[in-house]
Image (spheres, rainbow, N blue to C red):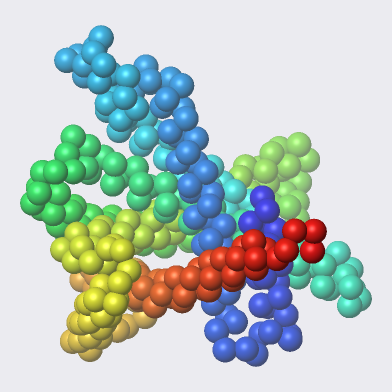
Length: 362
């Protein structure tokens, strides 16, 4: 909750007339929403862990482990089905939340006046943040759940097995994700058309159809509005599913890159920083070359399977290239942290020496 409050304030300031003209201000709302969503995803994952620890019988315990010491370990049971069920619940809940909040993210009207308008914008920022955070929460949860499923039963010391699994999973989620996203995009058109038709029919029925009777007419309007809301929720679910598939694919390829280049997660040193910089520059050049060869386009999923696959691959490349630059920045700032730490320790040591050198009673 504390992070959400701070994130809302930062997001609202970024949208204000004072800060809106600053370079990069337009990316702040999206970044704050992702930060809040990442925290929300970690919260749900912690709840999943606590649930598995408190109720291990909810997981599938292999018969060979019954009554053994290994059965007491948290990760000994196969909790894949439980994790998938919990992730599905989070997805459905987030879809409903995003659908309900959508009108409030677009316009909140409580009156006029400078203070009232500022409050209205602030409330809109809250709903926008919550909506973005809900979507990011789903992405974080599904990435963790699917990665856990992918690596279930694989020991850390199995060498190349993990690498091959990472590569196979990245290729599979890209192929399957692009196919599913293409199908969802086609279904969205149907849901949008059906929802628009239901909304128009409800508006016409609201004007009155005397031959049906007042009660029957009210019931028909309610049924049509419910149908329109259902179609809107299905469209939001489709958008959330496509975004989640893209996020999972990006994380999968990031795992491949980080597994093939272990220095990306190594302890920062000058050698590690230079090597990570070289790797990230090479990845960036490769990504730019890919975009030049296939055409950048708008990066959106469409009904065209080839376009969807290009969008997925481009998104995955942007994901791990961006993560590579994050790690490069980490490698750059860590030495400054060490320098500050050394200076603080030096000042503390001087203070202690001065205190010991002072005469008693001084």
